[in-house]
Image (tube, rainbow, N blue to C red; front, side, top):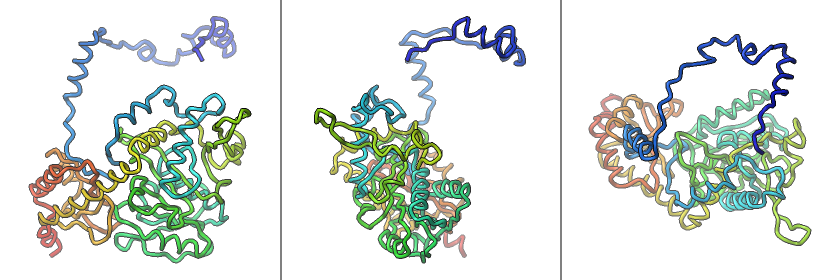
Length: 449
C-alpha cells in the first residue's frame, strides 16, 4: 500500500476536534530547542567517498580472535546460499500470512521448515516457529499444564538460567508453582514426580554442556502422568538421540545454531514440536498440505481456531508478527547442508571440544570432563572469571561465559568449541591462560590449601 498523507482538510478537522488553532499550537508545550534543533548534518558523499568512510569506521573495530563463547549462542559454518536465498524479498517478512491463497511460496517454505524440525526431533507436529528459545520452552510448560490440568512444574537447574527466568515469569503471573531440580553435580538425578506435577523440564545438552539421561527423566515424568518438556539444541540432534526417540512429549528450544548469525545476540527463533495428542493445545501457526479445487498441491494455515485472531482470549498463544524469516533461514541452511553436512558440524563440534579439553589437561588445567559432554564444559580458573576474561580479551581471545555460582564450581567458566575451532585457536587460548598464571591445578591446590 502506498503512503497517502493527510489532506489539508483532514488536518483542519483534526485540529478543530482537539481545539488547537494550528499544528504549532498543538506542540507549543515542547521546548523550541526540541521542535527546531540545530542539527549539523554533513554534506553528502559520492559512492567512493562513502565506501572509504565506512572502511575507516570499520578499521576501528578489533579483529575477531579465537572465540570460545557459548551459553546458548554459537557461530557455526553457514553456506553462502543460506543468506542469499533468505534475503529474497518474498521471504523478508515477520509474518505468516493471513491469506494463504496469495502466499503459496512462503507457506511452502514454512511447511518445509516444519518438516525439517519434525525430522530432527522425531516428533510429528511442528509449528511455524516461536519468538525465541526461552519463550518457546515456557509456552511448552503452559501447554503441559493445559493438557494435564495440574499446577506444579519441575525444572532442572541444567536448563539455561535465562530460560528458567522466563518460565518463572510466566508461572508467577498465573500463580502456579515451580520447583528447581539440583544437578549432581553435572546432570539431573532422576526426580520423584508426584501426581500434581504437570511436567518435568530438562535441557539436552544442559547449560553446562553435559549430556543428560533423558530417557530416565522421561520415565520418571510419565510414571506419574506428567509430560516431559525437552529443551534441546537442534544441531546436537544430528548426533544425540532425538526427543521422540526417548519419549519426550514436547521439544522446544532456540534455533540459532541452525544457521542464524549471532548479530550481537539476535534475532534467532524459537521452535516447538509435539506429539499429535497435543495438537489442540499447541500454540503458534500451523501450515498444512492439501489439494485445491483443481487437484493441485496447495498449502494452508490449518487449525486456526487455536489462534488469537480467531478466539482472542481463548487462544492457545498470541503469536502474530514473529520470527518467520529466521525460521525459513534455518530451513534453507539445513537443506543446503543436508543430513551429512549437518552431522559434520555436530561431530566437528564434539571432536574439537574434546581436543580443547585434552589440550587444557596437558597444560596443567583441570577441566571438568568426568561426565559426557557435547561441545561445552566447565573449566575452574582460580580467580574471578570477569577478571580473567578481560585479561584474555586484551590478548585477543574470547573465553567462555562465567559459570553461575548456583552450580557450585567456584570461580569457573564454560568453554565452547565448534567445528570452526582450529588447532591454532586452541593453542592461543591455552597460551593465554598460561600467561595469566591462574586456573592451573597447582594454583587451585594452593588456593584450596
